[in-house]
Image 1: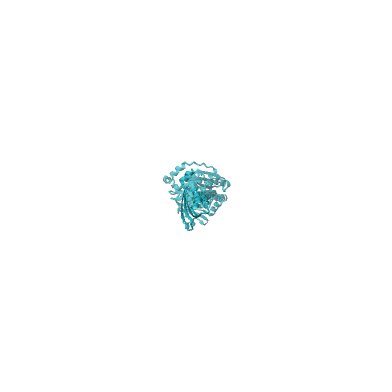
Image 2 (image 1 turned 90 degrees about the vertical axis):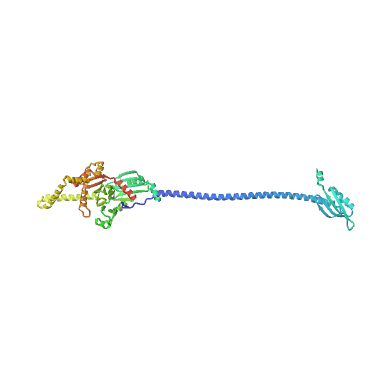
Length: 175
Length: 338
């Protein structure tokens, strides 16, 4: 101090009122910041959850599609199996019926089922037995029947009976 | 940095206190960066810091945290010396119990430490920031004259007369006079003189043999010298030293008519000035210079009689400037803050 005997007291703009006001604003700003941070965090976790759920949804949709594919495949398999089962049943009945056709005096050694025919190998005591007791029912089933014989060692005759169903004729008969 | 910013945003409040004989004058200035925005003043009929005074001051100081309260030192034990050298201070006064300040390495003003403590204690409720000496106020008020003239500068307060002699900015002599204490002592002296005279006249009358003729003759010779001053040449020489500019300035000032109380006080002031001037001329401690001009900073409203006395009795050119002590204190406070 050049002229005064004493130095002035320290002056500050931070009076008690200002300090109180600043404290109030600081606390308010801190609370707002805290809330903002909390909301940011919640938003972040929400976005994460949403992405996770979306990924899960996509995965489930993909899985659902796969399952649909599997279901359709299984359905087709089921249909096929049912078809096969039906065909087998028909075949079984056919075979049963076929074997029912064979008389006791004729012995079959081999039977080959073709797609549209049947080949039978066997032994018959004579041609008449064959002709009357086996060939007659076969002719009623198949459209074309061819038989050939050759003698066995014991005096009986071995035979090969080849039978075909003509599809055209069958279709026309169905019509 | 932040403090400077806040300081620029807020206005400054300068509270200036001048304690008088029976009242306290308070002058308040509200200042911005551009200057004085508002001012107010009030006078309270008390010397103490009453509730009324505190209320008045706080109504302004609460407007800004940057407020500065200044007071004019009213200590009776204050003064100034024409030196700043510590070794020479004791030559003029024992400063061990005083607070002193050096101005421009030219002169020193001082006051009692006890009085400063007393002021701080008395105003501790509002807190005093600056205590200014009347001599700094005086030197600042007559800044334009002090640096160029040899003259006596006097600050008139209602209780004090602060008297100083400056020669081209250098202090030669200073004295702070308390009118109450000086008046009392003078009254005692006057009464003693009167009683002595009474004794002489009553008991013996005047014995001419007791009169020292040689001494009286020397005095008469001195009167003879005074006669020489009556010549026109000498009067012209005096008139050359007159301050024309100050006379113009003074012409604008209203002339104060005196009543009996003012007359008594002005006479007392005149006596004090006369005594102080005699002290300055006679005391070997001070470098003596012949004083022709007296500049009075009138803070109380002195009458024209004082001027007339000084001019007629002491052959001085007297110039009176009215001073508002509060405004001058405010200026000093601003200078301190710059």
